Every structure is written in structure tokens, then in C-alpha cells.
Amino acid sequence: MFAQALSNWLQRRGLHFSWVIVTLTFFTGLSSAAALGLPGALLQPLSREFGWDVEQISSALAVRFALFGLMGPFAAIFMERFGLRNVVVTALTLVAAGMALATQMTQFWHLVLFWGIMLGVGSGMTALVLSAVVSNRWFDSHRGLVVGILTASSATGQLIFLPVGAWMIEHMGWRMAVLPVFLACAVMAVAVYLLMRNRPGDVGLAPYGAAPGTAPAAPAAAMRVTLATPFKILAEASRSSVFWILAGTFFICGLSTNGLIQTHFISLCGDAGLGPVPAASVLAMMGAFDLVGTIGSGWLSDRYDNRKLLLMYYGLRGLSLLWLPYSEFTLYGLSTFAMFYGLDWIATVPPTVRLTGATFGKEKAGMVFGWIFAAHQLGAAVAAYGAGRIRTLLLTYNPALFAAGAACLIAAAIVMMIRKPAVAGAAQPAAAKAA
Image (tube, rainbow, N blue to C red; front, side, top):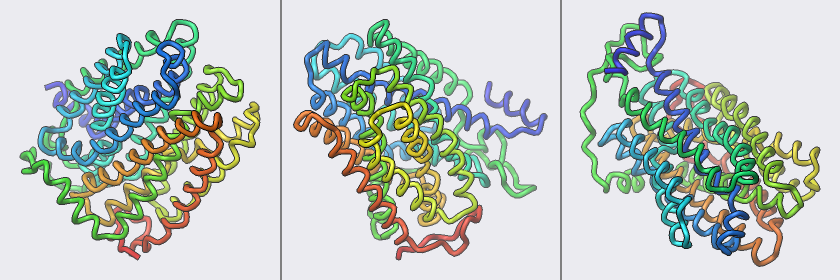
């Protein structure tokens, strides 16, 4: 009732309800990103309180990243079967509960359950697959820009919550730092329940950018799917070399972002004598640059060769990571790193989504991208655990930084193996073909 009334009110003023869906999705992603990012600031506080070493804590966070990614293909199925609203509300409830319950943990398995399993499953249901589904269902034009905006929500979540969280950890304890994230997830669960709808037809609209005169689509019946459907889609997609190139490069994307920098950057700065609040402020600076870079990437992906955009993004990220150990962790050095690394932190997502849609079609894009995103988070899990293991054994993160930087340069090279789409930069690009 609230959604239909708001849609009618906006329509009388020349505004499309799809932008309300984008707003809800943006703040949902923001809240989930804050929940995913905060544990990275807690490696040392948890270690001091419970006696767990960095490797142990990293292993629990690696479970979170793996589940975060593996939920992607099944999240797309759940969205088809149960609707966007039900899936998002359930996911936000899981994340909020996991954050709150962790404040009462006393044993290591509690950490694995609350911040590994619950946070991983909940955030995975509202991950980048949600952005891909929303952009494909609610928009016939500006899809790249929408994906860029929604992807940038993770940077904004980090921008808002991490410095505040680091300050609260230092002055009020880590348990109080969890409270803002819990409240954000709870508020968004209520907002989504009241306003989120599954498709434009549910409020009597055609997708944004549909041809003039297009009749509103009738509300769609739930798609007949089973838990086997994602595996059938995977079997079909795996016959294309484009799928493997995108999955492989996205594995490297996750390895070099969420798993390495998001999880270990504050601990890395601590090794160099930088406190958690200044380190979190550098991460926030990266988030500010990424907010600009990812939205800009969405705009560029609607207009230019997405392969060349990915070449530039991965190349720039790789060089940034290779340079970080030599930055001496000064204000100038870290600011320079934050700018160049931040501009393309997750700017890779809009071109990857566009290439996925161009290759596999609108109807399958969400589920195929779910598998590609699973590869991203498996890469993140490898780096989250691997970098912690390296730090425990060698007392330095430098080998992990060098390995991730080299991997990004490899990704920059192999992405050009995808054959250029027949119509580059078009709103509805032709299907890409494997090289």
C-alpha cells in the first residue's frame, strides 16, 4: 500500500518509482558493507581480549567471504522465487542479528558462527547480485550508471562507518562500535519491508527508459526454479571462455580488495606504527575516491569498451599495491595510495556486469553474475586467510601485497582476450563472443 501510494505521488511529479528501489538498494548495500568492513578494525582488539592470533581471526573472516560469494547464485534464485523484498528483509535481519550476538561471544566458534556464517549468508543475499537484478528488472536504460551507483554503496558504507567505528573502539570498546551498524541494518529492514517491490509491474509501471507507449507489465508470477537451477546455469555458462575470463579476473579482484585491503589494512598500518583511527581514515579516503570512481565507471561502461576499462582498472590497482610497501606509510604516501587505489577499488563491477549481460542475456545475467561474484569472494577468502597466515609466519604483509599486485597485472592482460562486442558502448550491446 505504501509503495503504490508513493509511486502514484512520484508519477504525478514526473518521477519514476525505480529510483526509490535504487535508493533502498543503495542503503541496504551501505549497511551490509559497514557490517563486512567493521571486523577488519577489530583484528587487534579481539586478539587482545580473547588471545586469538591474526591467523585464527582471519580464518573466521574467510568463512564470511566465502559464504558471501557462494550465496550469490542462490540469492538470484531466491529473488525469483520469493521476491526481492522478502529476501532483502531476511538478509538484513541475519546481518543485524549476527552483529548483535557477537557482542556476547566468549569462544572462537561463536566468532565463526556470528561473523563467519550469519554475516556471510546475510550479506551474500544482498551483495552485488542484488544490484545486477535491480538494474536489469527496473531499467531499460542507464543500467551501467545504476550498477555504478549501487556498487558505490559499499564504499560509502566504509566511508561513513569505519572512522566512527575505529573511534568508538578506541574510546568506548569494540562492542559499542557494533551498535551503529546493527541499528542501520534494522532501520533498513523496516524501510525495505514497507517500500520494496519486486518488479515495475507490481506498481503498474514499465521499466525506466522503456520505449514510449510501452504498457505496464502485469505483476510477474514467480519463476519456476529449483536449487538445481544455478548449477544448470553454471554448466551452460562454463562452456563460454568469457565466463572463465570474467570469473578469473573477478577472483583476483576479490583477492586484491575485500580479502586483503578491507580485512588487513588497519592491522597493516598498525605494524607501521599508525593507530586504528588514522588507518580507518585512510580507508574512508579510499571509500570517497571509490564512490567517485565507481559511479564514473558506471557512466563510462554505458559508453566505452568495457574490456579497456577493466584493463585500466586492474593495471592501476596492481601498480598501487606494488608501490604500497614503499610508501613509508607517511601522510603523503598513504594519501597517494588511497587516491589511485580508491578510484578503482570496485570500479571493475559495472564493466563486468555489462560484459556478463552482453554475453549471456538479460534473463540469465543475474544468475551468471552470481557465479562470477562467487569467484570474487573466493578470492577474497583466499586473501583474508592467506595474508593473515603470511603475517603470522613472516611478521610482515609485504609478500601478500606483492602477490596481489602481480595478480592484478595478470588480470589486466587476460581481460583483453574477450572479443569486442559488435556494438561497443551501446545501451543494448550485442552478445560478446569468446576469443
